Image 1: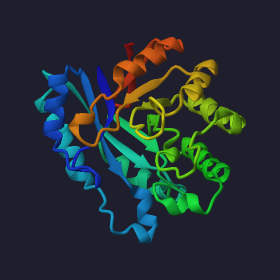
Image 2 (image 1 turned 135 degrees about the vertical axis):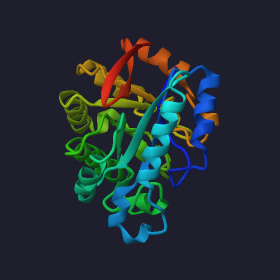
Image 3 (image 1 turned 180 degrees about the horizontal axis):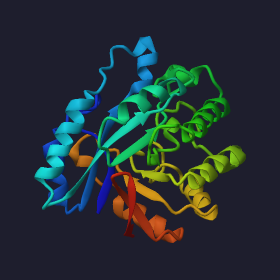
Image 4 (image 1 turned 30 degrees about the vertical axis):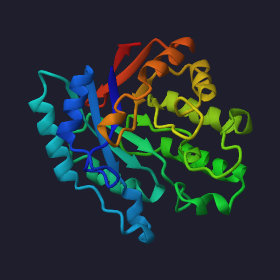
Length: 267
């Protein structure tokens, strides 16, 4: 087992000690864990989110690199980061990420049209179709980010706090746009993340099985598994079920990352 998307106290929304996270991973029998804390660079362009503290990048990369060395005989530790994409933040990420040795970078959408889609206000001013459309358009834009990243995180994130009676994001409603997203992920050699932080969505993971199947049909092979754990109890949640589903869709491998290079692990 392995997990390519986890958070510790270096993220503003986690209190988990990174050493405890690694110790838990070892006890569970994981062979690899990437600690990919939030770099919310996009929020520096949104004054209303000044109350959210930014990650201390020097501390994060130094501490996780030290733990990687400390535990190298017991588990592979990936030194990672999760970038919150927004067009305005591209130069910030370009200028800062090059200063660090990174195993894995996740590129994710959390804010859309300068709003946090975890807040009810995002949905209240939009129809469901509009809310999901602009989210998917933001995902498509993020794929062209000029900084080095490895995977596109949790496609379908917008439904986690959706307020509509039917929150499902259906492929058929946005088929051309979703196909464009998936084709560009494939053509750029990026990975599609299977993210099991899906409570309340009615799904086993994000993106939906329907979209993941379409990725396979279009020739996609690079998949990462991420629990998006913010505390150690959630490490590798849904791993076995996800692997069963992925095998049924024809996938043979999941991928972990070291020095930005994908390493295949047979499912």
